[in-house]
Amino acid sequence: MISRAQAIGLLTPAVLLLIATGVFPLALVFFYSTHENFGNDFFFVGTQWYSQALLSSGFIFDALRSLAFSCLTLAIELPLGLFVALRLPREGRMSSIIVVLMVLPLLTPNIVVAYLFKALSLPLVGPLTWIASQVGWDFNLNHVIPAWFLLVVMDCWHWTSLVVLFAHAGLKAIPTEYYRAAWIDAATPWGIFLYVQWPRLKLMLGIAAILRFMDSFMIYAEPLVTTHGGPGTATSFVARAFFQTKKTQFELGYGAAVSIFCFMIVVIFAAALFRLAMHQESET
Amino acid sequence: MNIRHWPLVPLTYVGFLLLPLYWLITMAFKPEFEITRQLTFWSQHPTLDNFVTVLTERDWWMGYVNAGIYVVMNVVISVGVAIPAAYAFSRGDFPLKKPLFFSFLVFRLIAPVILVVPFTEIFYDLGLFDTHIAVAMAHCYFNLPVAVWILEGAISAVPLEVDQSSFVDGHSLLGFFRRLLIPTIAPSIAVTAFFCFMFSWVEYVLAGALTAVNAKPINGIISRIGDITEGDYGMLAAVSILGFVPGLIFMLMVRRHLIQGFSLGRVR
View (cartoon, each protein chain N blue to C red):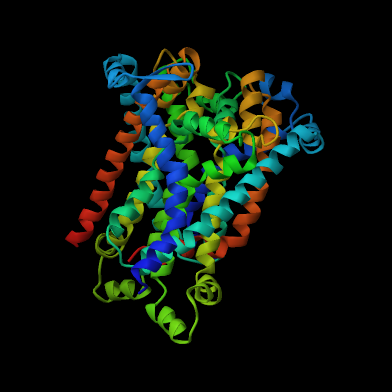
Protein backbone atom coordinates (compact mmCIF):
# COMPACT_ATOMS: atom_id res chain seq x y z
CA MET A 1 0.00 0.00 0.00
CA ILE A 2 1.10 3.51 -0.72
CA SER A 3 0.10 6.65 1.11
CA ARG A 4 -2.85 8.71 -0.01
CA ALA A 5 -0.59 11.62 -0.94
CA GLN A 6 1.60 9.37 -3.05
CA ALA A 7 -1.41 7.91 -4.82
CA ILE A 8 -2.75 11.34 -5.64
CA GLY A 9 0.66 12.45 -6.88
CA LEU A 10 0.92 9.42 -9.17
CA LEU A 11 -2.55 10.04 -10.53
CA THR A 12 -2.15 13.75 -11.20
CA PRO A 13 -0.50 13.58 -14.64
CA ALA A 14 -3.13 11.17 -15.93
CA VAL A 15 -6.01 13.19 -14.53
CA LEU A 16 -4.63 16.45 -15.95
CA LEU A 17 -4.06 14.87 -19.36
CA LEU A 18 -7.58 13.52 -19.42
CA ILE A 19 -9.04 16.86 -18.36
CA ALA A 20 -7.15 18.60 -21.16
CA THR A 21 -7.91 16.08 -23.92
CA GLY A 22 -11.24 14.68 -22.78
CA VAL A 23 -13.19 16.74 -20.26
CA PHE A 24 -12.41 20.12 -21.80
CA PRO A 25 -13.29 19.24 -25.44
CA LEU A 26 -16.46 17.51 -24.25
CA ALA A 27 -17.37 20.59 -22.21
CA LEU A 28 -16.88 22.68 -25.36
CA VAL A 29 -19.29 20.41 -27.24
CA PHE A 30 -21.77 20.93 -24.43
CA PHE A 31 -21.23 24.69 -24.66
CA TYR A 32 -21.88 24.66 -28.42
CA SER A 33 -25.00 22.60 -27.88
CA THR A 34 -26.57 25.31 -25.71
CA HIS A 35 -25.51 28.29 -27.82
CA GLU A 36 -26.14 29.73 -31.24
CA ASN A 37 -23.17 31.24 -33.02
CA PHE A 38 -22.73 33.98 -35.56
CA GLY A 39 -19.08 33.73 -36.40
CA ASN A 40 -17.34 33.87 -33.06
CA ASP A 41 -20.23 35.42 -31.12
CA PHE A 42 -22.16 32.93 -29.05
CA PHE A 43 -25.67 33.41 -27.66
CA PHE A 44 -27.22 31.19 -25.07
CA VAL A 45 -30.26 29.39 -26.48
CA GLY A 46 -30.91 26.81 -23.76
CA THR A 47 -32.28 23.51 -24.99
CA GLN A 48 -33.33 24.76 -28.43
CA TRP A 49 -30.93 22.51 -30.38
CA TYR A 50 -31.86 19.49 -28.28
CA SER A 51 -35.57 19.88 -28.90
CA GLN A 52 -34.90 20.53 -32.57
CA ALA A 53 -32.95 17.25 -32.78
CA LEU A 54 -35.62 15.32 -30.91
CA LEU A 55 -38.38 16.74 -33.08
CA SER A 56 -36.63 16.09 -36.37
CA SER A 57 -37.57 12.72 -37.80
CA GLY A 58 -34.16 12.61 -39.51
CA PHE A 59 -32.26 12.26 -36.25
CA ILE A 60 -34.74 9.86 -34.66
CA PHE A 61 -34.72 7.49 -37.62
CA ASP A 62 -30.96 7.69 -37.98
CA ALA A 63 -30.60 6.82 -34.30
CA LEU A 64 -33.01 3.90 -34.63
CA ARG A 65 -31.13 2.61 -37.68
CA SER A 66 -27.81 2.95 -35.84
CA LEU A 67 -29.26 1.07 -32.90
CA ALA A 68 -30.56 -1.68 -35.16
CA PHE A 69 -27.22 -1.90 -36.92
CA SER A 70 -25.29 -2.11 -33.63
CA CYS A 71 -27.58 -4.80 -32.23
CA LEU A 72 -27.44 -6.81 -35.44
CA THR A 73 -23.65 -6.76 -35.63
CA LEU A 74 -23.32 -7.56 -31.91
CA ALA A 75 -25.74 -10.46 -32.33
CA ILE A 76 -23.45 -11.92 -34.99
CA GLU A 77 -20.00 -10.93 -33.72
CA LEU A 78 -20.37 -12.02 -30.09
CA PRO A 79 -21.57 -15.62 -30.70
CA LEU A 80 -19.28 -16.07 -33.70
CA GLY A 81 -16.27 -14.69 -31.84
CA LEU A 82 -17.03 -16.84 -28.81
CA PHE A 83 -17.46 -19.95 -30.97
CA VAL A 84 -14.13 -19.39 -32.74
CA ALA A 85 -12.36 -18.69 -29.42
CA LEU A 86 -13.74 -21.88 -27.86
CA ARG A 87 -12.35 -23.93 -30.75
CA LEU A 88 -9.00 -22.16 -30.77
CA PRO A 89 -6.23 -24.24 -29.16
CA ARG A 90 -4.98 -22.78 -25.88
CA GLU A 91 -1.42 -22.57 -27.13
CA GLY A 92 1.02 -23.90 -29.68
CA ARG A 93 2.30 -22.84 -33.07
CA MET A 94 -1.05 -23.24 -34.81
CA SER A 95 -2.73 -21.05 -32.23
CA SER A 96 -0.24 -18.20 -32.56
CA ILE A 97 -0.33 -18.29 -36.38
CA ILE A 98 -4.11 -18.04 -36.27
CA VAL A 99 -3.99 -15.19 -33.76
CA VAL A 100 -1.51 -13.22 -35.89
CA LEU A 101 -3.62 -13.67 -39.05
CA MET A 102 -6.75 -12.82 -37.12
CA VAL A 103 -5.42 -9.46 -35.99
CA LEU A 104 -4.86 -8.29 -39.60
CA PRO A 105 -8.36 -6.81 -40.03
CA LEU A 106 -7.98 -4.97 -36.71
CA LEU A 107 -4.94 -3.19 -38.14
CA THR A 108 -6.89 -2.00 -41.17
CA PRO A 109 -8.21 1.58 -40.96
CA ASN A 110 -11.99 1.92 -41.44
CA ILE A 111 -11.50 3.98 -44.55
CA VAL A 112 -9.45 1.20 -46.18
CA VAL A 113 -12.02 -1.42 -45.21
CA ALA A 114 -14.70 0.79 -46.74
CA TYR A 115 -12.91 1.10 -50.10
CA LEU A 116 -11.94 -2.58 -50.10
CA PHE A 117 -15.56 -3.67 -49.72
CA LYS A 118 -16.64 -1.12 -52.26
CA ALA A 119 -14.22 -2.73 -54.72
CA LEU A 120 -15.53 -6.18 -53.76
CA SER A 121 -19.08 -5.13 -54.53
CA LEU A 122 -18.53 -3.12 -57.73
CA PRO A 123 -21.31 -3.82 -60.22
CA LEU A 124 -20.36 -6.61 -62.67
CA VAL A 125 -16.64 -6.70 -61.80
CA GLY A 126 -16.68 -7.05 -58.00
CA PRO A 127 -16.04 -10.63 -56.84
CA LEU A 128 -18.83 -10.41 -54.25
CA THR A 129 -21.30 -9.30 -56.91
CA TRP A 130 -20.05 -12.12 -59.12
CA ILE A 131 -20.44 -14.80 -56.42
CA ALA A 132 -23.93 -13.53 -55.64
CA SER A 133 -24.88 -13.64 -59.32
CA GLN A 134 -23.70 -17.27 -59.50
CA VAL A 135 -26.34 -18.20 -56.94
CA GLY A 136 -28.92 -16.03 -58.66
CA TRP A 137 -28.82 -13.07 -56.28
CA ASP A 138 -28.84 -9.66 -57.91
CA PHE A 139 -26.37 -8.00 -55.51
CA ASN A 140 -27.16 -4.39 -56.20
CA LEU A 141 -26.37 -1.76 -53.56
CA ASN A 142 -29.36 0.25 -54.72
CA HIS A 143 -31.51 -2.26 -52.90
CA VAL A 144 -31.97 -2.22 -49.16
CA ILE A 145 -31.05 -5.81 -48.34
CA PRO A 146 -27.74 -5.95 -50.27
CA ALA A 147 -26.78 -2.55 -48.83
CA TRP A 148 -27.36 -3.68 -45.25
CA PHE A 149 -25.84 -7.09 -45.96
CA LEU A 150 -22.64 -5.46 -47.19
CA LEU A 151 -22.35 -3.14 -44.17
CA VAL A 152 -23.01 -5.94 -41.68
CA VAL A 153 -20.54 -8.31 -43.37
CA MET A 154 -18.00 -5.52 -43.46
CA ASP A 155 -18.34 -4.84 -39.74
CA CYS A 156 -18.15 -8.55 -38.90
CA TRP A 157 -15.10 -9.01 -41.10
CA HIS A 158 -13.41 -6.04 -39.49
CA TRP A 159 -14.17 -6.60 -35.83
CA THR A 160 -15.15 -10.19 -34.92
CA SER A 161 -11.46 -10.82 -34.24
CA LEU A 162 -11.59 -8.36 -31.36
CA VAL A 163 -14.21 -10.56 -29.69
CA VAL A 164 -12.15 -13.69 -30.42
CA LEU A 165 -9.06 -12.05 -28.94
CA PHE A 166 -10.84 -10.99 -25.74
CA ALA A 167 -12.59 -14.33 -25.32
CA HIS A 168 -9.36 -16.22 -26.00
CA ALA A 169 -7.60 -14.16 -23.33
CA GLY A 170 -10.42 -14.91 -20.89
CA LEU A 171 -10.19 -18.63 -21.63
CA LYS A 172 -6.42 -18.70 -21.24
CA ALA A 173 -6.75 -17.18 -17.79
CA ILE A 174 -8.59 -20.31 -16.59
CA PRO A 175 -6.15 -22.58 -14.73
CA THR A 176 -5.88 -26.08 -16.26
CA GLU A 177 -6.69 -27.56 -12.82
CA TYR A 178 -10.27 -26.43 -13.27
CA TYR A 179 -10.60 -28.54 -16.40
CA ARG A 180 -8.99 -31.50 -14.64
CA ALA A 181 -11.43 -31.19 -11.76
CA ALA A 182 -14.31 -30.99 -14.23
CA TRP A 183 -12.95 -34.06 -16.04
CA ILE A 184 -12.77 -36.02 -12.77
CA ASP A 185 -16.39 -35.06 -12.08
CA ALA A 186 -17.22 -36.38 -15.57
CA ALA A 187 -18.65 -33.02 -16.59
CA THR A 188 -20.21 -32.74 -20.02
CA PRO A 189 -18.75 -30.20 -22.51
CA TRP A 190 -21.86 -28.09 -21.90
CA GLY A 191 -21.34 -28.30 -18.15
CA ILE A 192 -17.71 -27.25 -18.53
CA PHE A 193 -18.78 -24.32 -20.65
CA LEU A 194 -21.49 -23.23 -18.23
CA TYR A 195 -19.66 -23.60 -14.92
CA VAL A 196 -15.97 -23.33 -15.79
CA GLN A 197 -15.63 -21.15 -18.87
CA TRP A 198 -18.65 -18.83 -18.93
CA PRO A 199 -18.09 -17.20 -15.51
CA ARG A 200 -14.62 -16.12 -16.67
CA LEU A 201 -15.69 -15.15 -20.14
CA LYS A 202 -18.60 -12.86 -19.56
CA LEU A 203 -16.63 -9.89 -18.25
CA MET A 204 -14.28 -10.06 -21.25
CA LEU A 205 -17.23 -10.45 -23.61
CA GLY A 206 -18.99 -7.58 -21.89
CA ILE A 207 -16.03 -5.29 -22.48
CA ALA A 208 -15.72 -6.41 -26.11
CA ALA A 209 -19.46 -5.76 -26.54
CA ILE A 210 -19.13 -2.25 -25.10
CA LEU A 211 -16.23 -1.36 -27.40
CA ARG A 212 -18.06 -2.77 -30.41
CA PHE A 213 -21.34 -1.08 -29.56
CA MET A 214 -19.68 2.30 -29.34
CA ASP A 215 -17.90 1.93 -32.69
CA SER A 216 -20.76 0.44 -34.67
CA PHE A 217 -23.27 2.92 -33.29
CA MET A 218 -21.09 5.76 -34.57
CA ILE A 219 -20.27 4.07 -37.89
CA TYR A 220 -19.40 6.71 -40.46
CA ALA A 221 -16.86 6.01 -43.21
CA GLU A 222 -18.21 2.64 -44.32
CA PRO A 223 -21.73 3.71 -45.36
CA LEU A 224 -20.40 7.00 -46.73
CA VAL A 225 -18.01 5.24 -49.11
CA THR A 226 -20.08 2.22 -50.10
CA THR A 227 -23.76 3.13 -50.03
CA HIS A 228 -23.78 6.92 -49.55
CA GLY A 229 -26.45 6.31 -46.93
CA GLY A 230 -28.76 4.87 -49.52
CA PRO A 231 -30.85 3.59 -51.08
CA GLY A 232 -32.89 6.56 -49.90
CA THR A 233 -31.96 6.83 -46.26
CA ALA A 234 -31.83 3.08 -45.63
CA THR A 235 -28.22 3.14 -44.45
CA SER A 236 -28.03 6.66 -43.07
CA PHE A 237 -26.73 6.49 -39.50
CA VAL A 238 -26.35 9.10 -36.75
CA ALA A 239 -22.72 10.01 -37.37
CA ARG A 240 -23.38 10.74 -41.03
CA ALA A 241 -26.34 12.99 -40.37
CA PHE A 242 -24.27 14.80 -37.78
CA PHE A 243 -21.40 15.42 -40.19
CA GLN A 244 -23.69 16.55 -42.97
CA THR A 245 -25.46 19.10 -40.82
CA LYS A 246 -22.15 20.49 -39.74
CA LYS A 247 -20.63 20.69 -43.19
CA THR A 248 -23.52 22.05 -45.17
CA GLN A 249 -25.44 24.35 -42.87
CA PHE A 250 -22.81 25.21 -40.27
CA GLU A 251 -25.26 24.56 -37.50
CA LEU A 252 -22.66 23.97 -34.87
CA GLY A 253 -25.19 23.83 -32.05
CA TYR A 254 -27.39 21.24 -33.70
CA GLY A 255 -24.42 18.99 -34.45
CA ALA A 256 -23.23 19.37 -30.87
CA ALA A 257 -26.66 18.52 -29.44
CA VAL A 258 -26.76 15.39 -31.61
CA SER A 259 -23.26 14.48 -30.40
CA ILE A 260 -24.33 14.79 -26.78
CA PHE A 261 -27.35 12.57 -27.44
CA CYS A 262 -25.15 9.97 -29.15
CA PHE A 263 -22.67 10.01 -26.30
CA MET A 264 -25.49 9.57 -23.78
CA ILE A 265 -26.98 6.63 -25.68
CA VAL A 266 -23.58 4.94 -25.85
CA VAL A 267 -22.90 5.50 -22.14
CA ILE A 268 -26.33 4.15 -21.15
CA PHE A 269 -25.85 1.04 -23.26
CA ALA A 270 -22.32 0.55 -21.99
CA ALA A 271 -23.49 0.82 -18.38
CA ALA A 272 -26.29 -1.66 -19.04
CA LEU A 273 -23.94 -4.13 -20.74
CA PHE A 274 -21.40 -3.76 -17.96
CA ARG A 275 -24.02 -4.30 -15.28
CA LEU A 276 -25.18 -7.41 -17.13
CA ALA A 277 -21.67 -8.83 -17.23
CA MET A 278 -21.00 -8.01 -13.56
CA HIS A 279 -24.42 -8.98 -12.29
CA GLN A 280 -24.10 -12.58 -13.42
CA GLU A 281 -20.69 -12.61 -11.80
CA SER A 282 -22.22 -12.23 -8.36
CA GLU A 283 -24.73 -15.00 -9.04
CA THR A 284 -22.18 -17.74 -9.59
CA MET B 1 -0.42 -33.23 -36.77
CA ASN B 2 -3.45 -35.36 -37.43
CA ILE B 3 -6.02 -33.55 -39.54
CA ARG B 4 -8.69 -34.52 -37.04
CA HIS B 5 -6.97 -32.42 -34.40
CA TRP B 6 -6.79 -29.35 -36.59
CA PRO B 7 -8.79 -26.42 -35.29
CA LEU B 8 -11.12 -26.35 -38.28
CA VAL B 9 -13.48 -23.66 -37.00
CA PRO B 10 -10.75 -21.06 -36.41
CA LEU B 11 -9.07 -22.00 -39.69
CA THR B 12 -12.31 -21.53 -41.61
CA TYR B 13 -12.79 -18.21 -39.87
CA VAL B 14 -9.28 -17.08 -40.81
CA GLY B 15 -9.99 -18.17 -44.38
CA PHE B 16 -13.03 -15.89 -44.39
CA LEU B 17 -10.82 -13.03 -43.17
CA LEU B 18 -8.13 -13.65 -45.77
CA LEU B 19 -10.39 -13.61 -48.86
CA PRO B 20 -10.93 -9.81 -48.89
CA LEU B 21 -7.26 -9.32 -48.01
CA TYR B 22 -6.31 -11.47 -51.01
CA TRP B 23 -8.39 -9.14 -53.15
CA LEU B 24 -6.63 -6.14 -51.65
CA ILE B 25 -3.28 -7.65 -52.60
CA THR B 26 -4.28 -8.49 -56.17
CA MET B 27 -5.70 -4.99 -56.66
CA ALA B 28 -2.39 -3.44 -55.70
CA PHE B 29 -0.73 -5.17 -58.66
CA LYS B 30 -3.46 -4.34 -61.17
CA PRO B 31 -3.70 -1.28 -63.39
CA GLU B 32 -6.86 0.73 -62.77
CA PHE B 33 -8.72 -0.43 -65.89
CA GLU B 34 -8.32 -4.05 -64.86
CA ILE B 35 -10.00 -3.35 -61.51
CA THR B 36 -12.97 -1.36 -62.72
CA ARG B 37 -13.62 -2.95 -66.12
CA GLN B 38 -12.78 -6.65 -65.70
CA LEU B 39 -13.19 -9.42 -63.19
CA THR B 40 -9.85 -11.19 -62.91
CA PHE B 41 -8.88 -13.32 -59.97
CA TRP B 42 -5.21 -12.51 -60.40
CA SER B 43 -3.61 -9.70 -62.32
CA GLN B 44 -3.39 -10.21 -66.08
CA HIS B 45 -1.25 -7.11 -66.47
CA PRO B 46 0.84 -7.18 -63.29
CA THR B 47 2.39 -3.84 -62.46
CA LEU B 48 4.42 -2.36 -59.64
CA ASP B 49 3.50 1.20 -60.58
CA ASN B 50 1.28 1.73 -57.53
CA PHE B 51 4.03 0.74 -55.11
CA VAL B 52 6.65 2.73 -56.99
CA THR B 53 4.49 5.87 -56.79
CA VAL B 54 3.86 5.49 -53.06
CA LEU B 55 7.49 4.85 -52.24
CA THR B 56 9.06 7.48 -54.46
CA GLU B 57 6.72 10.47 -54.28
CA ARG B 58 7.32 12.50 -51.19
CA ASP B 59 3.65 13.43 -50.70
CA TRP B 60 2.84 9.77 -50.34
CA TRP B 61 5.61 8.31 -48.22
CA MET B 62 5.67 11.33 -45.93
CA GLY B 63 2.15 10.24 -44.92
CA TYR B 64 3.63 7.17 -43.25
CA VAL B 65 6.37 9.21 -41.60
CA ASN B 66 3.84 11.71 -40.22
CA ALA B 67 1.55 8.98 -38.92
CA GLY B 68 4.57 7.19 -37.43
CA ILE B 69 5.69 10.34 -35.60
CA TYR B 70 2.42 11.14 -33.90
CA VAL B 71 1.64 7.49 -33.14
CA VAL B 72 4.98 7.02 -31.38
CA MET B 73 4.47 10.31 -29.50
CA ASN B 74 1.03 9.19 -28.43
CA VAL B 75 2.21 5.75 -27.30
CA VAL B 76 5.02 7.29 -25.24
CA ILE B 77 2.70 9.84 -23.61
CA SER B 78 -0.16 7.39 -22.99
CA VAL B 79 1.96 4.61 -21.54
CA GLY B 80 4.24 6.96 -19.62
CA VAL B 81 1.35 8.68 -17.88
CA ALA B 82 -0.65 5.48 -17.44
CA ILE B 83 1.98 3.48 -15.53
CA PRO B 84 1.96 5.67 -12.37
CA ALA B 85 -1.81 6.10 -12.58
CA ALA B 86 -2.37 2.36 -12.93
CA TYR B 87 -0.10 1.79 -9.94
CA ALA B 88 -2.10 4.27 -7.87
CA PHE B 89 -5.37 2.58 -8.87
CA SER B 90 -3.99 -0.85 -8.08
CA ARG B 91 -2.20 -0.18 -4.77
CA GLY B 92 -3.54 3.11 -3.52
CA ASP B 93 -6.46 3.75 -1.25
CA PHE B 94 -8.14 7.10 -1.72
CA PRO B 95 -11.69 8.41 -1.75
CA LEU B 96 -13.71 7.94 -4.96
CA LYS B 97 -11.22 5.43 -6.33
CA LYS B 98 -13.77 3.27 -8.13
CA PRO B 99 -15.83 6.11 -9.62
CA LEU B 100 -12.63 7.75 -10.82
CA PHE B 101 -11.46 4.52 -12.45
CA PHE B 102 -14.76 4.15 -14.27
CA SER B 103 -14.89 7.77 -15.33
CA PHE B 104 -11.52 7.18 -16.98
CA LEU B 105 -13.04 4.34 -18.97
CA VAL B 106 -16.08 6.39 -19.98
CA PHE B 107 -13.86 8.61 -22.13
CA ARG B 108 -13.04 5.62 -24.28
CA LEU B 109 -16.72 5.70 -25.30
CA ILE B 110 -16.56 9.09 -27.03
CA ALA B 111 -16.50 8.70 -30.79
CA PRO B 112 -13.74 10.79 -32.41
CA VAL B 113 -16.24 12.53 -34.75
CA ILE B 114 -17.86 14.14 -31.72
CA LEU B 115 -14.66 15.93 -30.76
CA VAL B 116 -13.54 17.11 -34.20
CA VAL B 117 -14.84 20.68 -33.84
CA PRO B 118 -13.61 21.39 -30.28
CA PHE B 119 -10.18 19.89 -30.97
CA THR B 120 -9.83 21.93 -34.15
CA GLU B 121 -10.74 25.09 -32.21
CA ILE B 122 -8.39 24.29 -29.33
CA PHE B 123 -5.37 23.47 -31.46
CA TYR B 124 -5.95 26.47 -33.74
CA ASP B 125 -6.00 28.76 -30.72
CA LEU B 126 -2.84 27.17 -29.35
CA GLY B 127 -1.14 27.58 -32.71
CA LEU B 128 -0.66 23.83 -32.88
CA PHE B 129 -2.88 23.11 -35.88
CA ASP B 130 -1.17 20.83 -38.41
CA THR B 131 1.49 19.61 -35.97
CA HIS B 132 2.24 16.05 -34.87
CA ILE B 133 1.86 16.84 -31.20
CA ALA B 134 -1.72 18.02 -31.77
CA VAL B 135 -2.79 14.63 -33.13
CA ALA B 136 -0.74 12.81 -30.49
CA MET B 137 -2.49 14.78 -27.73
CA ALA B 138 -5.95 14.40 -29.27
CA HIS B 139 -5.51 10.62 -29.39
CA CYS B 140 -4.75 10.52 -25.66
CA TYR B 141 -8.38 10.69 -24.60
CA PHE B 142 -9.10 7.23 -25.96
CA ASN B 143 -5.71 5.60 -25.47
CA LEU B 144 -5.01 6.70 -21.90
CA PRO B 145 -8.09 4.89 -20.48
CA VAL B 146 -7.16 1.71 -22.35
CA ALA B 147 -3.59 1.92 -21.09
CA VAL B 148 -4.67 2.52 -17.49
CA TRP B 149 -7.14 -0.35 -17.68
CA ILE B 150 -4.68 -2.93 -19.05
CA LEU B 151 -1.83 -1.87 -16.78
CA GLU B 152 -4.00 -1.76 -13.65
CA GLY B 153 -4.81 -5.42 -14.30
CA ALA B 154 -1.15 -6.24 -14.85
CA ILE B 155 0.01 -4.49 -11.68
CA SER B 156 -2.73 -6.09 -9.59
CA ALA B 157 -1.37 -9.47 -10.65
CA VAL B 158 2.04 -8.63 -9.13
CA PRO B 159 2.16 -9.91 -5.53
CA LEU B 160 2.12 -7.12 -2.97
CA GLU B 161 5.24 -8.63 -1.33
CA VAL B 162 7.29 -7.49 -4.31
CA ASP B 163 6.52 -3.85 -3.48
CA GLN B 164 6.96 -4.31 0.25
CA SER B 165 10.32 -6.08 0.08
CA SER B 166 11.55 -3.43 -2.32
CA PHE B 167 10.63 -0.60 0.03
CA VAL B 168 12.16 -2.52 2.96
CA ASP B 169 15.36 -2.74 0.90
CA GLY B 170 15.32 1.05 0.80
CA HIS B 171 14.24 1.61 -2.79
CA SER B 172 12.52 4.90 -3.43
CA LEU B 173 9.21 4.83 -5.30
CA LEU B 174 10.98 5.91 -8.47
CA GLY B 175 13.73 3.31 -8.02
CA PHE B 176 11.12 0.64 -7.44
CA PHE B 177 9.32 1.63 -10.65
CA ARG B 178 12.51 1.56 -12.67
CA ARG B 179 14.22 -1.52 -11.25
CA LEU B 180 11.34 -3.78 -10.29
CA LEU B 181 7.88 -2.83 -11.42
CA ILE B 182 8.55 -1.95 -15.06
CA PRO B 183 10.71 -5.03 -15.78
CA THR B 184 8.10 -7.25 -14.08
CA ILE B 185 5.17 -5.98 -16.11
CA ALA B 186 7.18 -5.47 -19.33
CA PRO B 187 5.02 -7.93 -21.34
CA SER B 188 1.89 -6.02 -20.39
CA ILE B 189 3.54 -2.72 -21.23
CA ALA B 190 4.38 -4.12 -24.67
CA VAL B 191 0.76 -5.19 -25.17
CA THR B 192 -0.52 -1.81 -23.95
CA ALA B 193 1.82 -0.09 -26.39
CA PHE B 194 0.54 -2.35 -29.16
CA PHE B 195 -3.10 -1.52 -28.46
CA CYS B 196 -2.39 2.22 -28.24
CA PHE B 197 -0.38 1.96 -31.43
CA MET B 198 -3.22 0.15 -33.18
CA PHE B 199 -5.98 2.54 -32.09
CA SER B 200 -3.92 5.60 -32.98
CA TRP B 201 -2.66 4.20 -36.29
CA VAL B 202 -6.13 3.40 -37.65
CA GLU B 203 -7.86 6.57 -36.38
CA TYR B 204 -8.30 8.94 -39.30
CA VAL B 205 -11.16 11.35 -38.48
CA LEU B 206 -9.25 13.46 -35.94
CA ALA B 207 -5.90 12.83 -37.59
CA GLY B 208 -7.28 14.09 -40.88
CA ALA B 209 -9.11 17.08 -39.40
CA LEU B 210 -6.21 18.35 -37.30
CA THR B 211 -3.65 18.31 -40.11
CA ALA B 212 -3.33 20.06 -43.44
CA VAL B 213 0.05 19.65 -45.06
CA ASN B 214 2.98 19.31 -42.69
CA ALA B 215 1.59 16.53 -40.53
CA LYS B 216 -0.91 14.90 -42.93
CA PRO B 217 -0.99 11.16 -42.17
CA ILE B 218 -1.46 8.44 -44.73
CA ASN B 219 -5.08 7.75 -43.73
CA GLY B 220 -5.91 11.40 -44.19
CA ILE B 221 -4.43 11.23 -47.68
CA ILE B 222 -6.46 8.10 -48.44
CA SER B 223 -9.73 9.70 -47.44
CA ARG B 224 -8.85 12.80 -49.42
CA ILE B 225 -7.99 11.05 -52.70
CA GLY B 226 -11.03 8.89 -52.10
CA ASP B 227 -13.17 12.02 -52.05
CA ILE B 228 -11.61 13.52 -55.15
CA THR B 229 -11.02 10.66 -57.55
CA GLU B 230 -13.83 8.42 -56.37
CA GLY B 231 -11.29 5.77 -55.55
CA ASP B 232 -8.13 4.93 -57.39
CA TYR B 233 -8.38 1.38 -56.09
CA GLY B 234 -4.95 0.14 -57.11
CA MET B 235 -3.29 3.06 -55.39
CA LEU B 236 -5.45 2.68 -52.29
CA ALA B 237 -4.60 -1.01 -52.13
CA ALA B 238 -0.87 -0.40 -52.40
CA VAL B 239 -1.02 2.33 -49.76
CA SER B 240 -2.98 0.09 -47.39
CA ILE B 241 -0.70 -2.90 -47.84
CA LEU B 242 2.35 -0.82 -47.00
CA GLY B 243 0.34 0.55 -44.08
CA PHE B 244 0.18 -2.93 -42.57
CA VAL B 245 3.95 -3.18 -42.29
CA PRO B 246 4.57 -1.24 -39.05
CA GLY B 247 1.63 -2.89 -37.31
CA LEU B 248 2.75 -6.34 -38.40
CA ILE B 249 6.31 -5.78 -37.23
CA PHE B 250 5.03 -4.51 -33.88
CA MET B 251 2.65 -7.45 -33.56
CA LEU B 252 5.34 -10.03 -34.33
CA MET B 253 7.45 -8.44 -31.62
CA VAL B 254 4.74 -8.72 -28.97
CA ARG B 255 2.89 -11.79 -30.28
CA ARG B 256 4.06 -14.00 -27.42
CA HIS B 257 2.53 -11.62 -24.90
CA LEU B 258 -0.43 -10.47 -26.94
CA ILE B 259 -2.90 -12.82 -25.32
CA GLN B 260 -1.34 -13.20 -21.91
CA GLY B 261 -0.34 -9.60 -21.39
CA PHE B 262 -3.76 -8.10 -21.33
CA SER B 263 -5.51 -10.87 -19.46
CA LEU B 264 -3.01 -10.96 -16.59
CA GLY B 265 -4.90 -10.45 -13.39
CA ARG B 266 -7.76 -8.81 -15.19
CA VAL B 267 -9.95 -11.90 -15.35
CA ARG B 268 -10.08 -13.17 -11.83
